[in-house]
Amino acid sequence: MSIVSTIADAGSRALDGLGQLAAVVTGGDLRLGVTGLRRSGKTVFVTSLVNNLLAAGLRPGDAGHLAQLNARGRILASRLDPQPDGAVPRFDYERHLADLAAEPPRWPDPTRAVSEIRVSLRFAPSGWMRRRVQDQATLNLDIVDYPGEWLMDLPLLREDFDAWSRKTLELSRRPPRAALAAPWLEMLAATDPRAPYEEATARRLAEAYTAYLHACRSSAVGLSLLQPGRFLEPGEMAGAPVLTFCPLPPGTSPPGSLAAQMEARFEGYKEKVVRQFFREHFARLDRQIVLVDVLGALNAGAEGLEDLERSLATTLEAFNHGRPTWLSWLGGARIDKVLFAATKADHVAAAEHANLKSLTESFLAGPLNALRFSGAAVECKAIASVKCTESVTAEHEGRPLPCVKGIPEGRDRPTVLFPGAVPPDRSWIGPAEQGRFRFEPFRPPPGVGRDGRGLPTIRLDQALDFLIGDRLE
Image (cartoon, rainbow, N blue to C red; front, side, top):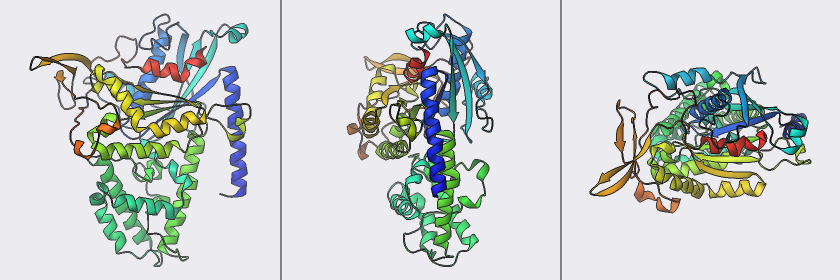
């Protein structure tokens, strides 16, 4: 990066930091980053969050499904307001809600591009100092949604082309990736990276590498550490030359060679795509919720869980965590609260939720410790953005069995299922456990949210109370 760009970035970070400190004092704006890999449920989470906050404002005195957040009737009114960044598409809340309320109900389509939405909350301050100044106050909550694949690009900012190529090639030769990478690796072995650059060769290699990434994403393991993310979800950049590169064996890069051009495109991708995306959407976050599909990783076995752990640990390092102080504004906005949410808790019986939480804490012990050391407040919860099942007890061979009752995907009638037990920590999961877990996905329940009290959830109120409750005081 040039000196001019470095100085400009430093100035922008300082302004972001000053803006964050001012918001803490005035209570005006709060930027919430909904972070999660593909299939973690970001779109459904944002839809449910907005729906429940709006329902809380429509029914003052009725806490609805946000009992803990709104236990004292803090929210007096709420509404959707124009987002501050008019150049970013608005999160299509109405369409996603219509999908959930359809007959039959269906899950919203996954996110294909970045979007934002603002919910403004009118509340009665409870803090002594703020009550002396005003009887009512407004919190503008800005929420960002984006494809989970793009999150995996953030670690690239700390790597050069050779380091990234070496790591990616090494990973591609291990199971379960080796079989999926074979066609691309064979093509790579037959190519001389030091030969003069030809666009046709670069395109063939990039297409083969992209096909490998798609195979990893759709495999039974459902791998998460897939870079670059725009190769999988290019958005408006489909067909752009900056997406035409792939990892190459480390070595010299003579001017005009295939290796030199691919290295240049990798650096261009970092600067023009990843850094810009991070600067515009992540560098100004105040709070962060990290959605984690632990049950999906368990279905994939030890390899799926390890890949999820590796992916989350590397991406979280890119964020600026810690408690803001009067001097920290020089380094830009800081994320002072982080919630790790194990999603789809309704797919297992309520008795298993404690294990789901402890398992999440177990395999994310490193990132959790690093965040706490930075000064950020950290919590972990098992949640469901939309509750699709009821916990019931069935009898099996004369013994009670904790089950769930809901409509599994592919069926049209409620069914009682025993989803299985969730291990309390990662020490219970090894290669021998492959294929043991089969946590079934469920359809949204018919008539969901029609009572006007918001979409039914599990612990969304606790999650929101941790993330924004202090800003409603």
